Image (tube, rainbow, N blue to C red):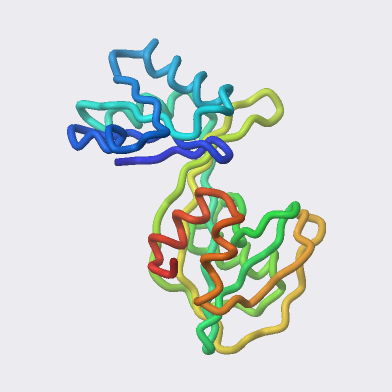
Length: 204
């Protein structure tokens, strides 16, 4: 199964397991060719009443690769930073709790991007880079382009609860070190893609 996030909505590619059959809020379509994929993308992108649209695929990777051709693709990376007290670093961007992340610059690998973006957006010293948690895909419209952003998320460690400095020019107004037990409350008010990162990391 593979998910592409359209703001708060999800396009979910699935196979014979048909998880959408158990989801009462789902719309289910089938990959019957290029027009079917285009219709699925239009539907989830424009219909805010549909929160989850499942596409039944014979080959999930093949369907995913064909969907990608309909977008301008960019790579990004971010980090889930844990301090020595078991707290996690969150940012408040444009009024919504989030994790630090940003676009990959020329010459960087995604791990370097993740560390740089965490430092820039939170003001903490360079964290210790850990393993890749997951890669999330989400879409947006900008400057006449329909963008598909692939964000690589890394587990990171900070030796202590460092003081922070929100990068206000990026719309970040607050940072917070949050105890693990309080993360579900923050997760309830964030983006589905960020909840996916927290779930994959095993912290919610």
